[in-house]
Length: 421
Image (cartoon, rainbow, N blue to C red):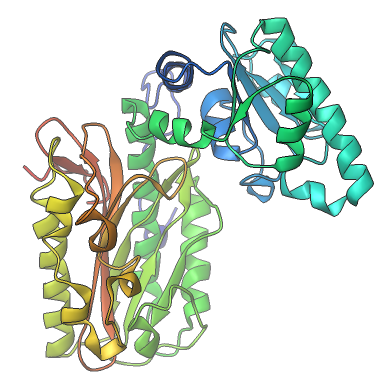
């Protein structure tokens, strides 16, 4: 591998280096889901059409085109059962069975095609017939486990399915999605290591951008090199990653235009939804094509100070309000782009939980945290980001991925995963 794509990724499985212990990852996630669903909330089971919840409890995988809630596959976790059941799409179940020895052979079943958003493509009568088969399939398992009289948690909302269960005397609750967010908000050590690995891939992507960017090169060429660096290093991109430059860097377009770079351009990239073993990363880096102006350097310094000033207060027990207060009010600093209300600043100076999905608890933002604070807890992982304009028509974006430890934070995206204190 050439230097253009960074170092070889350091997490290949070997008999003499454990790396990520996948058995602990699988059993730990399943135990947390059971505790949240059955001990804390007393549900009889979880029916999941959400791909990332299904992956969390079953440790099985399907390509991203089925996500998040297509219904082409789904899972069922029942109180009293040791293992979940995965209902797989079509003949993919053949591979799921042979690739997932932690699941008993009988726990890989075929899915009733037509649940989730795919259902609406079948036509009304076919959809209704599929719902009947689907509910009959699930009800048989509820009865086998003796939980058919208990509440079935679901991580989706579908009035047809809820009505069909009700006709069989099964009570359902849409709180399954919230329960799984609570189960997933504290990360196991193995999950944190997966996030570290994802950030290593992100660093290789930024290295590819830095060595490719020059006047005349297009944003699309930069993205091509970044994507290549991702896949060369064993990563995957789930509907994400963009770079933007010049006049589109302020305010943040959150998309690429394909424009070609010119001398003096700011160019930044977000490697969001880059993943390793399903765990996502999300962080920005900003670059200058040639020598940046003094105004751009000053803007970078302000964004950097806002970011690290907020990081400096993060530890277990602080609230999202205390973090958000480290940032200026949007209308006070971004009037040049028409900001008069904090609702216009969503996604700018803020932080969001990250794991198997891009948005998990907590969310930190002046628009919600000042009046509705959340407590920061040990084991949370989140991305924290700031932006600022230079007053000359360009702007910068900075972001880090952090892990909340007992005493502070570990910055996973720092390149060497250093601790802030």
